Image 1 (tube, helix red, strand yellow):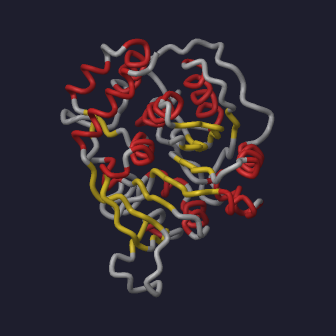
Image 2 (cartoon, rainbow, N blue to C red):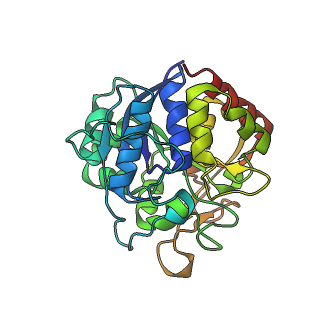
Image 3 (tube, one colour):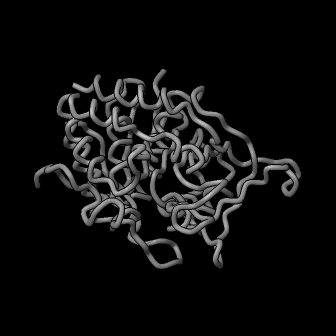
Length: 303
């Protein structure tokens, strides 16, 4: 089976690892990469996406997207990912340019032209997607599902309530969750469990050029501790390929857009407030041992 996907991303170290899997797994047909402001500014996230695509010599278009959230002021995560977004490896200066189309235009054209519904995988803030749905709602009919990294049912990493991608642009997150498209919420509830262990990281450095590159990035990742590093965004690709390794619960997810709970994703766990309707499968548990094994296997297969 081949999964036709588009990634909307803000590289970022874990985004770079997710892109690595999407570009190289034989079951995935990555049609387009769109960049958005998030971990760092959009000029840097676009350059970083280009660097990964060029590193693997893949013919996948990259489009630059939104420079800032819909309403709230932009706040990056350079303290976690470094000023460039991807420190730890020298990709050189010759990595190409984004296509002339904006991210929203590129998303519209690719989705509408697809001969079967596309799976959309956002691993950054959801600003490009919100703009797409607001300007071109006709694309919704040709999107199979959205597998989105972001959100949490428990503790946040920006506030006690909010995860970064939803906190960065909560109004965009609300538009996405209210879109009517099936959504898989790949949030902190599993990504903080799926740590790359120190043993995995040691083995990664021995796995050729790709392993060396990822090892360089991940060892410069200011997220994690002696138990390992969370590869938040990689969990979207893992879910795409191995949903059996992740436990999900269906519920309605609301996104708070104002006040101190801004960016909080609230799950209607009792089915009490939306007449029993749901808008998301929320990932709640993961086979972390299998995740580590899979991660190494994926990298080892890259030529």
